[in-house]
Length: 534
Image (cartoon, rainbow, N blue to C red; front, top):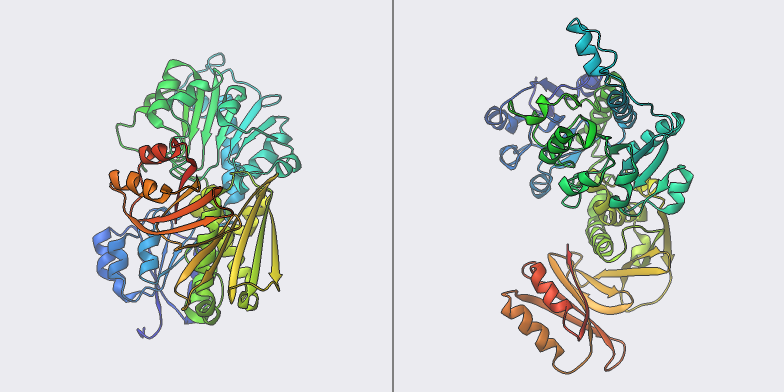
């Protein structure tokens, strides 16, 4: 077949319908080669314009460096843990996923594991197959009237809650980003602190993304807080539970049972200590493994890849906006600035918020505001949803969390020709960030923080201080950072009145250690010190 036709490599098993959709009309040359070792993938990838994977194939920086024609990586599933998204972005490769295709499948699997731990179904089956009749050994517990703690109330957690309520369970939810109003509408009880939920729950099911914040969120200390005999299910991400601590808690009898579909290392090693325990159920990452889910994600990723290669249309991208190619070129600087404003606001605002107000001013009102608002929200909600958040699913995620989003096109006259502003409301608390461009569109600036005029480059590490305005305070701050070997790239000062409280923002060459931030915070002239990473 002529090499003028774009070639697509399907490197992991996807549904037959998905492959048929890719090959429809003969406009793409589709090659299915699964189970390739990295060296072989690197050898053949230069001839392909698109690569389709699930979770087995690792799309590393080395693979991407060799992929000289590659335009698109399509992940038939939600997470993109096996794709080096940063390396892909640097090389201009679009990374797409299928954010909604396996929600029901995973929620049903989590509920199946919940029932399995309650009634020891796999163990009883194995006993029967071995010729035994151990009725007393496998006495279980009812779900009715029991308390289920759901950690993470995104799409899958929400679906699991609906099923648990139908079984007469009391549902507690822990999600730092879920609004009270949304929790009430779901008929779940929102618990502010994870440590307060754990002693109340008979069953715990995890549905968080894996981030630095959530890694080993159930460690030895927190497992000890669980009710004696509690049962834990993880169908979300390996690493949310400390597997060593889980093993100890099951062996000691403190936990009644556990069920795992995901693991810190997949597949688990031969000497995996949890294998030897009788009170645990294992499945090999089957959350999305239903005929319906696999067909859905296969067709969805095939359609997205065809749109990208044949029409220049971007769908379900995790590293680019879902807009046509011509518009993307015009709006890209705003998307980058919007993402930074969202990330900045997320690190200043409380975790649980009610409303986000996005305002466009000057020439920015002429831009396609939906794409920019999605970029702002994606930056803002990365902390809540991890890498699963993208411009396609971000509005749905905001709705799931009970976060109202308001957009305003302002006619207000300011010193700037074009500007974006984001205000985040949490009860009586309000955090706001504004940004614009200086000169060329590739020179963005943050120019407002909580109403204070500033000038900050929105990249790298920013140290934000609220300090008393007194002579010598700038030198004092510089001395402390200098003694700690932290270099200042630029500084912006803002004050409302002489001698009052001032806002100091510094672009730093490196992130200061916690001890440095602590030293600054303990200074009587410095009211607060926080590090923002952009």
